[in-house]
Structures are given as structure tokens and as C-alpha cells.
Amino acid sequence: MLAQHPDVREVAVIFREEEAANKRLVAYIVSELIPERLPYHRTCLVELDQNTMTLYTEDISYNGFCLINVPSSFKKGKPVRLRLLLPSESEERWLKGTIVWCQEQKAGILLSLTPFEQLLVHRSVDYILETQGFLKVLQRIITGSLRKYLKLYLPDEPVPDMFVILQSLPLTPDGQVNSQALPTPETNSWIG
Image 1: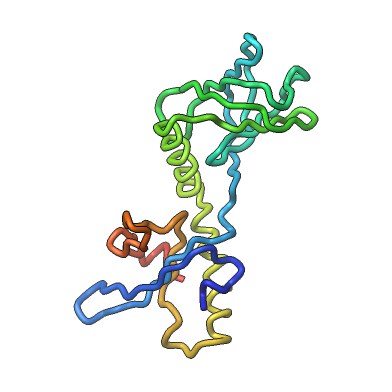
Image 2: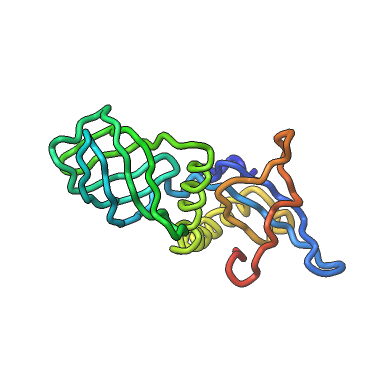
């Protein structure tokens, strides 16, 4: 039933035993409402056509950045390199990319990353989601909506006691949900 809700991309519902004889029904949700782009305002160096300039990021995604105050020399399809400090990292690094769009003084950069760099950027986006409170706000918004939705179709007992918002469900090597890797709900911040 939860999988049919328009805000739910993926779901796993399991019984969690917190204490002996105390089982709770927990719904782990990957929501369609998790933003793809997150605010990230940071100074960066950008190399374009053998010129280096200081620009600013506006946002970050798993695949790239939006830069602001870009000069007119920025054109779609041109390769660039960005030197910046990723969220949760302690050292700046150079990342390669391509300009995929330009509009007024903004440009979208699609990154061309090594597997290690992909991991770092992915971790950085996750870090922003968690530390800036995006997941907690989403938790509050979606929990009430999901409860109301389920109560329209189900009696109270099969409605989950808790909803936990995740960026992705952990999977086993054969593609099944790895229930052992699902986080234990934090009763103060994740109860819905």
C-alpha cells in the first residue's frame, strides 16, 4: 500500500524488536521528495580554456554543480576543471566536468568522476542532507501524509509505528533489501 503513495519511490516495512517482547512495525521510505540539488555556496577555482578564475557554487547534486557569476566565455559542451572543498572533506580537490547548460550568469557542470571521486561527491551530498536538516524536515512532512493515506485503506494495526526516511535502501549482492543493514530508528528524531 505504501509503495502506491506518490511521494514514495521505494519502501521496506519490517518488524523491529527494540526490547524483548516489544516489536514495532517500521517503514523505511525512499521518498520522491528528497531534493536532487542542494544549496551549497562555496568559492571555487575554475579552469576553462587554460584560464583560471574564481567563481562560486550555488548548489550541488550527485552529478554536478551549478556555478554563478560565470563569464560569457562559458559555453555548453566545453570541458572545465573545478577546485573546491567538498562538504565533509578537509582538503580541496580538482574535479573534471563539462558545461551542460548556461543561462544568464549561471552554468551547470556535469562532473566526469573516477569511482573514488563519485564516492566522495555522493558522501558530500549525503552529508548536506543529514547535517542541514533536510531529512528531518522531510520526515515531519511525509510522516503525517503517509499515516493519513494508510488510515484511509487500512485498520490501525498494520499502520507502521515509525517511518524512517532514507536516501536509498541497502541491498544484498543479489538485489534484495538487506534488513540487517537498515538503521535502528532513533526514537527522538525519526518517530513519525
